[in-house]
Length: 128
Image (cartoon, rainbow, N blue to C red; front, side, top):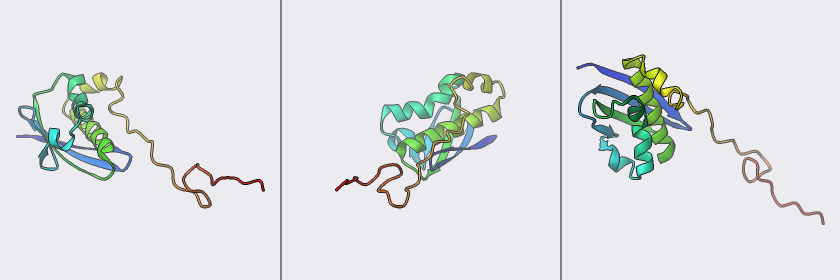
């Protein structure tokens, strides 16, 4: 049984994915993905790469994910699965490129600046 692994990232979340031939079981941090990602939107994000390549029930997925929030983690898992599917079959790249599933989203939280309450918010200005 051959296992393909890949890493996906989003914000501060990192997902390591192990893909093997199977029946479509997805396990995230030793839980079923429907338990780990409770909303249908997040579940859809995890499935997106399989839907794009039409390989929905052909691979078993084991995921280790840490860091970030639930949405960042779901998108990190999506990124990792997409990369693993390209490793398995190079033809998948053409199917996922238009949906930008292979692109690492570079947007990160901007740092807080000194003398301000947040990154861009300023303290209230008083003229007198």
